[in-house]
Length: 447
Image (cartoon, rainbow, N blue to C red; front, side, top):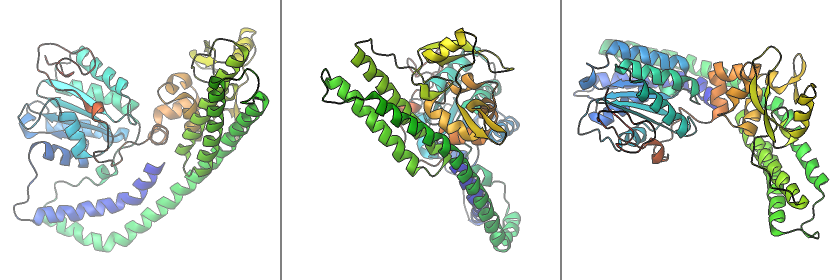
């Protein structure tokens, strides 16, 4: 949501700035782009695909334009570079150097000579997801660069979190002097109008965001209250007979989670920030379950996801097959009570939330509940759990939902990232590296 507001506010301004920059560039004597990696980074700041002129025989301009359109239509921060084997492109550090120079969180895929690899900021795509996508592309042994890159982008475009950088909307290029001067005049005339549009869009998006947060606040406050009641019912005293340090640590951790949840909700200004609240509650409930097992002298519980039907039920104990009305079966984690109800042919005790059509199970409510459920279950598992439901469909089809739910992507973050997420090199050996970034750096050749 924050990204959407920035887009509405700054998009027109960035466009005007790009026009002015184009004018300066077109008119400046001897103006030219930097060489090698700097040129690639500069191009990727303005658009999702860059092809080094020396690699144009392997990936044409038409193919590059089609791939760029696909990425922009998906509205995801996916960057693609097609580069030749050249001294300025050091295979072992190319991904992290490119990410550093571009300075934008996202997924970076690079075709270097006859090698291919990718890296990503974890908030945009997990390292395991990137490794799996790269491995799938390599093992498919596509005969052309076009097939490899389109295969990767098709998958990355559906899995990546975040939205495309706002700078792509203002990507200036191909301005001649006459066009630049003509558009420069529009900067003066249209500046006030662009600001007015940006201001109106900002107010509209802020209003939508406030409404979504208020919808969430009702549900989250109920969750926090329920957790506080669980703490009271526990009736544990750190000084009671039989209490040991492990029990006291569990209890202290649960109390901290309760306070953290309350503080996070009080400070929340955007719907996406609610995820931190439910993450804290999930963590606290597991501490309570561990404490209860210690007091009863029972085996400690396995760390499992909360009960799918209502996270307030606490950690699940088993996975079962379940299908929503009219939907396909899927495996969901459930608590012992809901497992018994299902075994007896009864409906589970589902968590309902308010909607315009009355109380509905949370998975049949609107996208505002995405951050709430994401804190309990995590982003990677939810599409499978919720497929075929209203919330699941929102996750699959709404770019805005991905941005709010998954965290930052497409945001300027400079060189503040973990270089391990962009490791690997580009080998031109005769085979395919089946996974990871080991051996020749994770870039098997043979294309």
